[in-house]
Image (cartoon, rainbow, N blue to C red):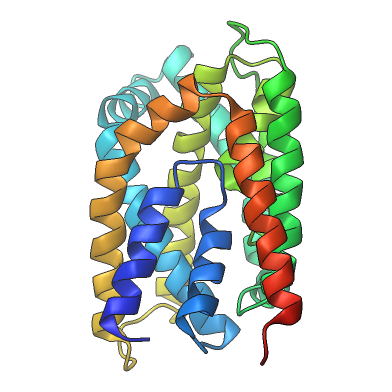
Length: 266
């Protein structure tokens, strides 16, 4: 992968992380179009690095929320911030289980399975369509809801299933307010990504000793900058726009990906 391709993929990640259209799915599509021939492990590593970049941009945008959560935890009181932190932890459990015990099986889905990405995008479209029909409420995320949303996040580790789309849709279908659903969705993934990075660093899987060092760093910077620029605008778009618009988009892209996956020569 050259530097230009890495920058393009980084921009794709930064722009699609905050919309319910599957950033991992778009990354796989982008890799296929750009002719990336990385093996699954390298492909997944590059995807993780880009997700780490957008996690940092999320922290910057939600810095006040993150600070309130940290302050609430160290106040040693069962206040709203502390409860929210525990809900975040609960939501991490399903995805953490997948990452710890089924990582090799997950890696097999990263590496050019375009038809699979297309089918997963169709599932995302269905989720968004039904969530769009749900009534908006003022309900907060409960501890039970946090776990159910966490299961959706674990499923969304598959390329093509939008993480934000799945988690926001699940929250909304559970009766949670759309604004609160979006906030919880964007914050719940941050510690999970940092945990993934930490695991890879200590295990030796994540390093910059390969020949794609510069390209990976370029992709990281591109994703971080694009994430900073897009996060504020796209979060507002998710809150105010109808999810059916994104459902239509995922449907169209999914069908194109399926056709491309079956018809493109290999």
